[in-house]
Picture (cartoon, each protein chain N blue to C red):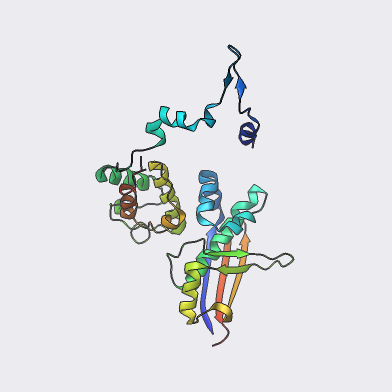
Length: 133
Length: 130
């Protein structure tokens, strides 16, 4: 059973401006440490990278149907050799997921995320499914 | 990172050219530094800024943010519902408030500040606000 779906669109120049104005401070405020550690080395790629990760966070909050959970508890990782991103929820976002799926632990939950970008825009879609019900 | 390199390779003890005595750079005598600049380094605890002054300064910070609809801005405005900001805008406004008052708001507190009044409350209850 699908427990939530969400989409978000981000204007990449917003992140370009944010980074040039506030630098690492705003990135450290908004992003999970693993996202920061895996940022692209090329500076001109970083706005696109963080914009698409931000889209994932917003899309996830829409799928969870609740804001105000903070942005660090939702993040994507990639495993070596696999280009598909993996959505990770912890803390407040994980609690909310268990609440809407009505489960004690998240072993039956499948989290799907898809990211795309073109020129000035990044988009992400998140789908949350409980495979037991 | 030239500045970092300067620090790490900086001689911890330097010989004074005039009298040959050993001089230590001020950065390894933090006590002396703190005393000389105590008003800048440490605020006496228990000094809170006046609420009216804080309100005006927070309103000025928010007013400078270009996306804010000036006609709707009051001390009670909610960033999302009243001022039409999104979460990214709000994160930036809160960061501007930090800069204005020379504060470091912990990340887990910062995202809970969602209105002008939340910011005023936070600043007026923080003795380190300048």
